[in-house]
Length: 173
Image (cartoon, rainbow, N blue to C red; front, side, top):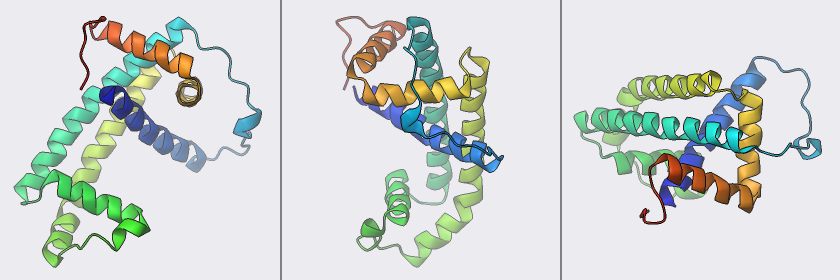
């Protein structure tokens, strides 16, 4: 269960990134999302989606290891890095997290290298989506529908379990 939530969270980040890129490239017309009727997700599409998200998880794990190593080389813990980054995105947290001058210096030093790792990761995931039979638009539609449709989410979990070789006996922490 935790693995599925993490995978979906990763995909959300990628979709936000992808959506921003599509808008930056100039999509003159934006259709209101509420008026878009999403067609039924087929089993085949769900399997393709699951394949892409599984690959995304592998890329994310590798990127996290790389980022952790970059931070460790500079004497910073990955969790501390996450805490600082979250505080920068959330004004309520910013007041609760004190960042030392040394940490600020470290963050400034590692920022380009971490961005490079993140961009490479995003490119890999984007390529996985493009190499699948799903269009980017359809991939995003399925993602949105998964968040809204409990039955579809259950089907997705089942597909992920089957792909991971799990059955009823599979344990998820």
